[in-house]
Amino acid sequence: MNKLLYLLTLSFYSCFLSGQEIVITDSDLQGDTTYNWTKDNTYLLDGVVFLEAGGVLNIEAGTVIRSQRFPTEDDVTVLVITRGAQINAIGTVEAPIIFTAEDDDLDRTNDVRHTDRGLWGGIIIMGRAPIIAGPDNIASLPGLENPELNRYGGSNLQDSSGQLSYVSIRHCGAGLTQNLPISGLTLAGVGSGTNLHHIEVIASGDGGIEILGGTAELKYLVAAINSDNAFEFRQGWSGKGQFWFGFQRKKSGDIGGAFAGGNTMASDLYPSPIISNATFLGSGCENNDPEERHNTIGLQFRGNLGGLFTNNIVSGYKKALEVEDFDNPSGTSRRIQDGTLSISNNIWSDFCEGNEIGGGPNGIFSIKDNFEDQEAAYLVEAFNTQGNSLTDEIGLRSICRNSQFCLNPLLNSGSPALFFGVPVDDPFFEPVTHLGAFNDQDNWMLGWTGLETYKYLGSKQQGGGKVVVDQNANCEVDSLESGFDGFI
Image 1: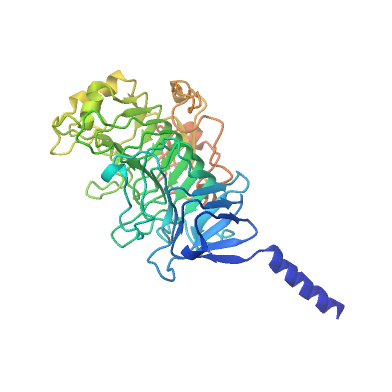
Image 2: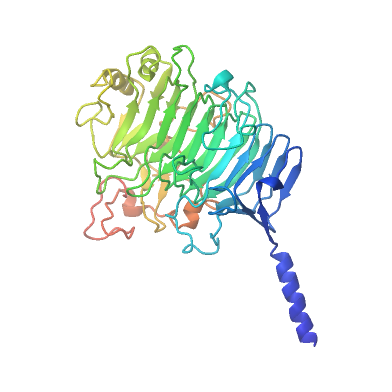
């Protein structure tokens, strides 16, 4: 009898301690109300869930939020933080906050695989910061119903939508409708008062992180093994970014950074964001097929874009760079020529369809048939005079695109990229002297990312610091494999 009582008591307390699964539908989150989600429970989002104005959602470090792939009423599951609402998802290195698919058992890596994408929608945060889009600079997202809540933009540069830190968003990117996919994280009109750092989007069925206008400032971002662009912004984003890492598997993903201004015909109205210390690694050139539309360009600039893009590393795409070059006063190429768009002090390496600075057949610049300057002479001049370097020696320890503990994006200890960085004169930016997202000591992705959970990250320096063509995909240097200047 005592044994039976002990077992029943143990069973009761085990259930209590393990928490419960709480299903969250749209009716469960209201405006002007504070909600506290805690790590002792698991939350299951069901359908499109809006947190309305005045609502505050606090999420404890270590909390897991799952999402239904086939929700009860809607076509997709999405969490939407509307204008005037706030989300405070504040994780830690030891206890990140994880948004993932319904069937993802975090104690296993073979139930939902690292290549399983588009199992739910993602997170959308809408703010009141300025945008260049829509009537009176207020816009809505296509495919997202409820017009009263689907609005973003405004005039508050310092608008705050809360905080996201040490947050991993996994297996997302399903469309609002069949033809309207969304990125894992969408920031629409989000202001600089929002605290955004250490955020990962991994295995998205669409893009990684998308920014629609606003003034958001973001550090320590990861967009990995997604189906479309790693990072994307448009509609007049005029914020700041530092320490971004974009990474693609073989034969997947597209542009590293697809960056656009406001698509306005007013030549004097253009955004000037700043991005420094980013590393963009494409899916590499092994088995490159020119006819396939993936891995097309490292960085793309269009839509009357100004700004500063500096101290970055770009490698492993078909082409390095595309700058929109139409014959009009608001063309992005004009921003290059008048100095309001600066692409400076970056390292470029290993492009599948070009190895020369230029726009010709062997050039690293992507030139469309309707561009004005087919040789991109203005871009060649800017590239050469603004401290850019096209090199075979990228200086990373291990570029490995397999799930074999062998991706190590730290710089080699003797790499020139450790010392050639030019700090940005702005208090948001940490005054580091290295290029790219990492120095030679600190892999800030360790401890909290899905990229580590899925066995990509490793600490070894493969091949004595040289790049090795890993022909048998075992992430080891074998006798028949040759080293040149990295590990692919």
